[in-house]
Image 1 (spheres, rainbow, N blue to C red):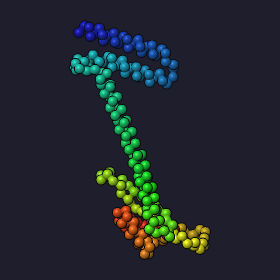
Image 2: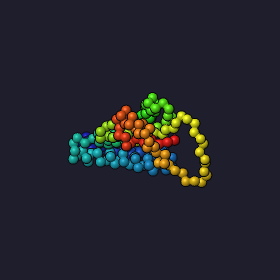
Image 3: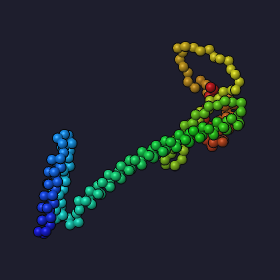
Image 4: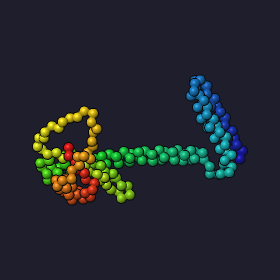
Length: 194
């Protein structure tokens, strides 16, 4: 018991000398108050360590501080992993949409060579089923024939694609073809005139 008391006093004296030396070296600025706080925490841990050992024989402050730092690092890694997963998923969805768009353009070009098309695809990833779902496919078509220039009106209300949605035999054929080729429902495919 006397030996542990002697070691405790030596630790306190060593820490007090260390704190005094550090305080003398530090310049008088805002950093000094933070360093005093940190040094005070070190002194408190040295003072309390033997009292805690009375109640818990296996107590070691280093083990507890290592466990706390590991827990903080694991939380940081979890956040980093979640952020990385989110970015990767977003990039994967964008690549999936771009590849699907290119594939649809090729299929339409092979089946309907007289049409110029633009394709827009929206997809999402389903975490529960671990698969991609195609939300909608918009196909803009234009004949390769040269058309007459339409009259331009200034300050007129601009109409969206709803007025240009095609419901003729050609659009039904394109919808039917894409539905069979891609294994999707026809109601997510919209054909509109460019």
